[in-house]
Amino acid sequence: MNSTIKLALVDDHKLFRGGLRSLIESISDKYTIVFEADNGLDLQRKLNEDNTPDIILMDVNMPEMDGFQTVEWLTAQFPGIHILVLSMIEKEETIVKMLKLGVKGYLCKDAEPGEFKEALSSIYDKGYYYTDFVTGKLINALQSDDGQDLYDINEREKEFLQLACSEMTYNQIADQMCLSPKTIDGYRMSLFEKLNVKSRVGLVLYAIKNGLVEY
Image (cartoon, rainbow, N blue to C red; front, side):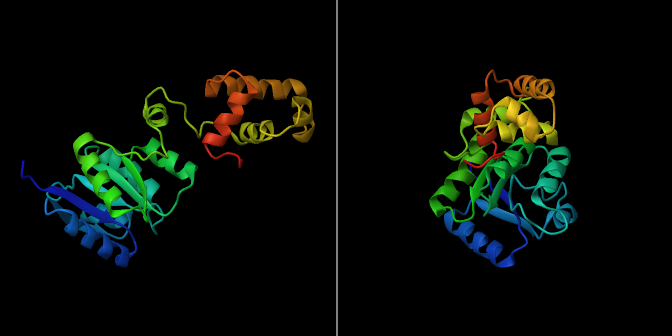
């Protein structure tokens, strides 16, 4: 039960990494930081079978190789490593995309130390940590094999979806998009099927939930 939990820090801000290291050391002596990296490429150079961490703490915005690309690479090459994102980005679209890629938790960098401690413990013990901002139901839908891909919507369908969130009628949307009502009806039915919804209200709720429109 005294085994050490190995961590790696991936963030291009050295001062932040230093503060994070100090916080981790103050939380518990069961954590060991095996290495630090400036970005995904630096991580690739330093990560090997001899120093594989249990958990990687990683930012989203980084030069050369950002968090999205890094998570994709890690998921393919080292699927056993748990990833906890630490970022100032709170956009739901970014969070959802990261979760879809397979990260096990997402925290804002201004989170309280107690919440950070809870996140580390939860990810190691349970395999995940999600705040109230992201419900368990949404996560299960996003990370299940049968989940709908948020990015499987083409640009014209997205434009229609955004207009459907207005007070415009479908005929007015057709005029706005310079399309026939029949084509608009085709977009509507296609999105009903893709998103597994049955009404315009369902389209609006989906668009709001996934950051496609402001509300």
